[in-house]
Image (cartoon, rainbow, N blue to C red; front, side):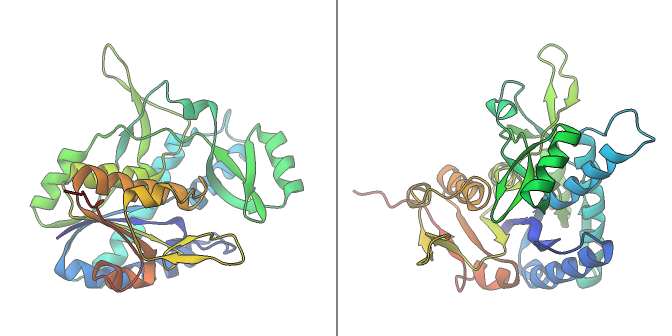
Length: 307
């Protein structure tokens, strides 16, 4: 079975942890342990988030006196894709001796007129108190928004239209490789209408929506979205949350999940199932094997058609 795995940012750096390389390596060791069992029996394509990492690089770049201007988000995204891809590739190489492991820098095409450029919603970077967040926002000209009990930077998150390296990924899979790609949703680019020339843009693409598009293009059987909760909850932020263990695209969309957390995951799962008739699931990293085998997480299946 071909499975596209979307690793949440928490798989690499949990909320409240210091963004040290040693901390991220320890978390990636957990990733390798969780995915190794799946890789023995299934064909895997792995995508990952980069919110904490790109936020850290953005702060460092903005504060660097050697720079005339901070590095743009597309180049910072490329840096995180290379760094995280290398950490994942090395760790999975050690966990899966004999497997071919490839990390591929990936570009994702977006529309220049996407309304997301006028409405930043994608959280990146660390959590701050409101006072500190407002101070940083004034200093660097950033947008901020409330995330749980704290405040974080928000940036534009246009919809992914096409992953430019899809054919290369097909060829790598045909050669038996486990492929790590589309990190952070892929490096966001636009194409010139006349020449087709590519240009980077100031944005971060939602990695779950990119994973759904990638899974569709690769004709995957299963989209596995791994995060820091065991399943989707109805009324997650209420005193009485209820686990949702079985869902269809229609029931997921009626859940009204927030944009900054479960919303994109639910939409990504719904899109993949709706467009392909395949299966998707949302659940905890450490239960990856159990989720695929129907023993954990929220399973998203096609709507039943009467008649």
